[in-house]
Image 1 (tube, rainbow, N blue to C red):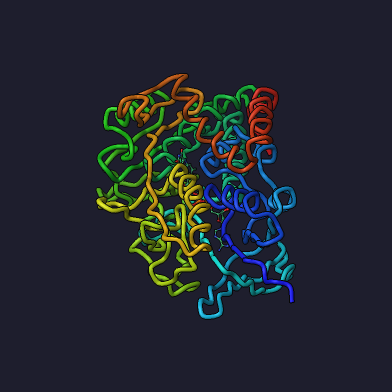
Image 2 (cartoon, rainbow, N blue to C red; image 1 turned 30 degrees about the vertical axis):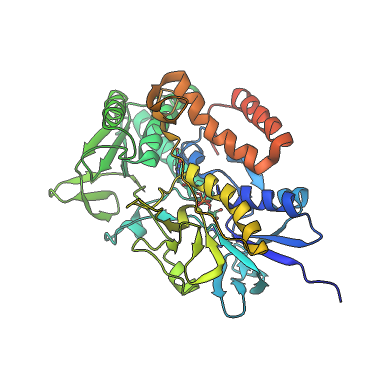
Length: 436
Ligand SMILES: Cc1cc2nc3c(=O)[nH]c(=O)nc-3n(C[C@H](O)[C@H](O)[C@H](O)COP(=O)(O)OP(=O)(O)OC[C@H]3O[C@@H](n4cnc5c(N)ncnc54)[C@H](O)[C@@H]3O)c2cc1C
């Protein structure tokens, strides 16, 4: 009887999972292993670029990776479905039925066997249980959400412009909650988009008509960055016309209004919620694995779950506190990429029965892009002698490097540079704004 192949199942093809399945497929080939990616979407767009998709300054159709084609090229299997449940006793994952827009089942519920399971399902914004957030705010965690935001934004701009040409109010108030990278980068990107709209024939609507309020509950923006950089970013955003409010604690979100703890309201036609990262609330129904207070899967420093030596978790969905640290590894693209790299060796050691090694997180610094207006951040490492603050073109280059590292992980050492070149070429040739 033919020997059964080792089946490695990865759930989630994002910043961590997609590079991982490519590397696993390239390492093992198809003879001895089946590498399977379970992913609920059909295409991948790198999450840190979603604010550009939402503002229309990036055309995701040109930059997305189709999982089907990628799988065929690299020799893994792509299964288009959402994880529904993990059956640890039978070492099976159960996927939910995939339905079309009309609700008709396209692919029925399935059971997929695993020898090793890597959960890389990312996270969601934390609504902190604040009333009205889930019903009345928009989110920026997936391509469909970014597309929806862009369509609503464009319609709102056109409506405001139309009202302005008839002597009415041309202003469009937008409220962004959360002064982390997503909120900050989206604010600047929206100002850039509003400026560009003028050349698309909108007679009276411009960046002055777009009234952005950025709310942050803490004392400063970008807590992951140095205070000096946070201050500079806040100052630059204010120069761009963004109303930055610090210490602004949201208590309720209602249609057209965000209420604050100090008793005031912020009127807004569009509300975007971008605070913190927590695990998908559905996780607790999928598995009996231990979850942190933020609903993320608790893993040992080896990235393995304490309860099951066949199951690992990486990226935003995991809660990993490394020896000597108090805080978990931060939910960032660089952590996801580093964990994915570590998993390749870890799975090899697990199969050979060798001891697993602890993950080592190397903080390379943090960068924030204010669209084409500015880039700020700090780099970490021996080369720069610890922490070095950077801005301008060097910072922009470093910011884009993170995406290039991702493209190399996803497309490999030969195709990767070509994809990067094509990406740069596209940036120059394509229109400034995607208006559909
Ligand atoms: C707008 C924005 C800007 C950001 N900017 C930065 C930045 O500048 N720098 C930085 O370091 N980080 C940034 N981040 C954070 C960064 O994107 C994440 O830390 C990173 O993407 C995490 O990678 P991941 O693989 O864990 O999750 P993700 O990249 O989110 O991938 C998770 C994948 O799992 C899939 N999935 C989810 N649930 C299921 C399920 N039940 N079944 C099957 N598939 C499932 C999803 O569809 C997705 O493809 C930003 C995030 C956002 C939203």
